[in-house]
Image (cartoon, rainbow, N blue to C red; front, side, top):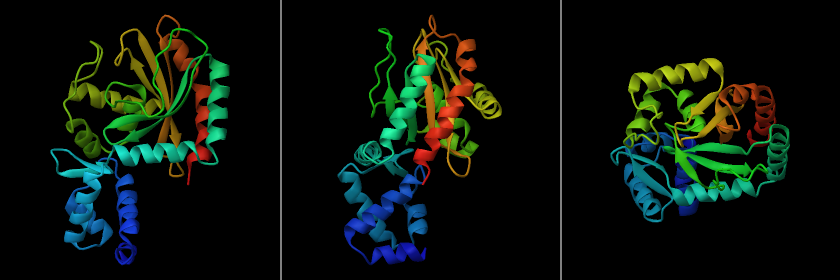
Length: 256
C-alpha cells in the first residue's frame, strides 16, 4: 500500500507501469475497486489512468466489462521483451535440444488473460506440422497448455476465466460439461501433465508439462504436439521424463 502511494507521486509513466505490473500478477483480472485497494491510490486517479491505458490498448475489460486485464499492446510488449532478454538464447537452445531428442515441435507458452500465448517455438523437421508463430493465441479449454494453466488455478479463478467467453466445441472431443472439466482438472494436477486428445484439432494430439516458478506454481508450460498418426498418446506420455527435464531447465531462465 505504501509503495502504491509513493508511486502515485511519480510521473504518469511510472504510475502506468505500476498499474500494469499489478495487473500482470492477476491474469483473471482486477475490478476497479480491487485495483484501487491493491495500489492504495484514489479511485478517480485509478479510473482516469485505466481509461487512458484502455484507449491505447494496454489494458482491456473482460468478464462482462467488470474486470481489467492486460491488453494486446502490453502482451506484445512483454513477449518482445522476453524474446530479447539475455536468457532468450538459452531458452532457444533448451527447446532446440528437446526437439532434437523427441523429433517433434516444442512450444513454450504462457497464460495471457483468457488465452494461451505462444512465447517461443522450435519446429521439427517433419513436413506435416501445425504453424503457430510466437505471439499466436489459442483457447484455454481445449489445448494441453491451456488446461494445464486452468488446472493449477483455484476453482473460483478458473470459473471466472471459463465464464469470460462462451465455451465452444473446436472438435467433437472438446470438453464442455462443467463436471467433465473439473474431473479433468483434478486428473491434471494429480498426474502432473495435461493432454489434448484431439480436442483442439482433429488428428492432432499434444502433451504439456508445467515450467515451475520458485513457489512451484506454473509460470509457463512446455508442450509438444503432432499428428496422432505419428505420435500416439502412449508415446507422448513416454516423453514425460525428457520434457520435465527441459521444463526444469527453462524454469531457471524465467524465474525472477
